[in-house]
Structures are given as C-alpha cells and as structure tokens.
Image (cartoon, rainbow, N blue to C red):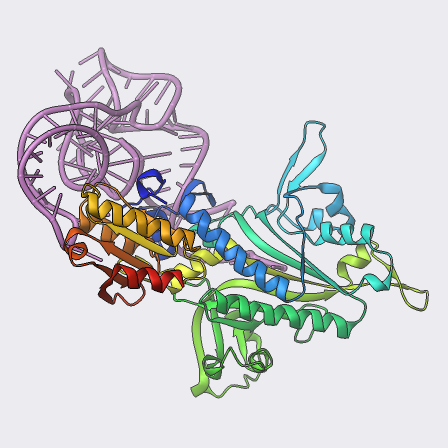
Length: 429
RNA sequence: CGGGGAAUAGCUCAGCCUGGUAGAGCGCUGCCUUCGGGAGGCAGAGGCCGGAGGUUCGAGUCCUCUUUCCCCGACCA
C-alpha cells in the first residue's frame, strides 16, 4: 500500500478531547474519528486493526467449538417483553419507532434474540450442547461516554451463548470459554487477569471478568500476587487461575475473610475486556425454550453468555503497549506487517528498490505500508513510530549504494543494517 | 442525572475583563535551498468566532435562550 494513496490523517498535536494515552494515540495515529459522544468512525488504519482483533477472537472461538452466526443490530421491543427486560433495562437502551410506529431498539446485547432463535430451530436433546457466537455492533446509551473507544456508546462485541442439557454440561461450556479467553488475550499480546464476579442467584464459581492490568483502568482489583506468576501456556493455567483470589474492589470490600495474606495481596487497576457467566434457565424459562429429552420429557436448557469487547480491546492493547513515540502493535493485530520508508522517492534507484521490496513481500503474503511521500526523513520516521508497525525498513541512497537497508524493530527500537536480499528473505520465508 | 468547564482556521490555542475591519504556532498550497530522526527562506490559501434572539451607531467581545463537546461524581448485564 502506497501511503501517498492512503488515508492516514496523523497529527503531532494531542487532541484536547482525549484524556488517556490510548485515546490520544488513536486520534493522533489516524485510527478513528469521533462523530458524536461515544461514537466513532473507523478510519482505514483503525479498521485494519479492528478486523485483526476480531480475527483473533474468531479464531479462538472456532477452536473452542463455538459456531458463528450473525444477528441484527436492530431488535423488536416485543422480543424483549418476552423476557421482561424491556421495562427493566432502563435508559441505557436506545429505543425508537419505525415508520409504522412499531417499537424497536438498537441491541445492547442478544440474550433474548439468541434464545428465540435457538427455540425456533431446535427440538431435540440431540441438538445440544451448542455454543453460538457473533461479532456485532452494540449500542448502550451510557450517561457519560469517555476514554475513547474504551467506554463508547457504540462498540463492537463478540458475544457467545451456550445451551446445555445439564449443569455439568453448562460448566464444561463455561470452562471452554474461560480457556478460550485466556488464549485469545494471550494471542493479542495481553496478560489478562480473571476476576471472580458476583453470580447472583446461581452462585458458585461461574462468573468471571477478564481484566487487562493498566493504571488507567476503570476498575480497582485486589488479587493474590501469585496470579502474576502463573504460566499461561501451561495446560492447567485455567484451573490454577481460578483457584487464586481476585476480586474487584467493591466485592473485595464485602469479603469477610480474605484468604490472601496481606504481603501477597496485590492491588492494581484493570480494564475489563471480557465477562462470562452462567445463568441457567433465566432466559430459556422466560422465553419458552424447551427440547425433548432422551426419555421423552421436555427439558429446559441451561445457558451461559460470554462477552468480549472487541473495539474496547484496541484501547486496552494501546494502554498496555506504547511508548513516548507512539503505539507498539503486537504482530497479531498490527495494521500492516512492515512499514517501508522510502527516503528519496525522487531517486530512481531508491524508488525502484522500494517498489520491488513492496511487491515481493506483498506477493509473499506480507502487508506493507510504503511511505513514498515527498517528505523529510524525520517526518517519515516519526509517522512510522507513531502508527506502531512492528517492523520498519528504511531504504535510502546511501545504504542502497552498498546494497544495504536499515531494519528496525519498533518494540525495542533496535536497528541494524542488512542487505536488501537478507531482509527480503527474513520476511518472505 | 447532579456539579464544573469549553465552543474562534484542519490541529493546539490567544483575543473577550475594558465593544471599533480576525490573530499566532503547527499543518496545508506554490517556489527556492535542503534532505539518514518532525530543517530554513519567500509567497499564498483557509473563518457566518457553535446556533437563535437581544442591547448598541457598531458585537468574536455585553445580556438571554439553545445545541454540542469535555471533566469530576453517581451509573456501567
């Protein structure tokens, strides 16, 4: 991709609206533009990241056995009357009428819709268990949106819903999502802490929030410092994590006897990026979801739901991975694999080398953002650092004369000269 | 929803108190000189001063209303 033909409105100045670093960098790096309070347009570079995050989430959902579908953003009020939540939800739900005066809403979540769909599609115990998910835009009319996409009103969310015949099965579905979440966040370059969340009437160990530790997080967490030492690649990591104490401050305050000795009790702030819980027959009962069991009796399936804030994750990743020069994308979500800095677009030899470099790597399946603009080197370096592509390759007349280019790793800042061929070979492998 | 701010060029902001022909830096356009970490010079373009009323000979500036955005708090399955 030639930068001279792309849309990348970067800025040196910090926008006055943005308070936290991820929001500032998202605006400065030309990822998003705010169009109304808590509502954002995704510019080309930001959309690429968003799609990459969604791809990682989707991949781990598929691996965990969840099945993707897509439900609409607009829902009928009557659907929500079936569960009783139309009146219970409050002003956070955006409501409106269509031209016929029918009451509609922009979905803040999809329990009702998935329960109705599943009810209408399934008759037999043989159709269970199933976990279904979709990645779709949601709207919650927050009183006070803030922190950019971290607390927007419109947001992209993965929500999964499990249907099981038994409590044991429900727990297995829950566990599968729990594990998938750990893998998802790890694949995004994040370390997530699972925190016990209140479970309401169900009780037990069946609701967790997943938090990314960051000083700008909205939640205050208290947890066993041993959590920091858990090896997430170990197969028993999920069980280990769930056995260790971790609570949000409000819940922690209610705990009569904290099992963690004071010297091991850590306190950090966290960004909630996922929330999973098992709620049994709450919606299946209310909405008449039943299947016929093996013995001929009607069985009410047990359900769980599992959310990941896809757009919020972009903010969380930046909070966790940036420096004074800009964003540092993990390779799994970077909008391009390589940033190519053409130091002298008006130099025929340099231009030819850059075009060949870009074409070769694109052919090898790598994405390259080629800065071919007529601009000074300093500006190009600064732009590349700001937008945070994992690798920068600089080609200029001096190096090219001896057949070398400069390769820079954004995360560490380390640079070295290498032959054009060896750099191509490194990426094209 | 309570409390507090803000709205002037694409961005960051002066100007308002004390009314008199719209400003700076960055960015943008052209030219020159430059060119390996946001250089320098010259010349330009770009504004219904958020909107509506009012006061006044005259309003970016004073008054009233209104809209929007931001911050603190409450809220956030």
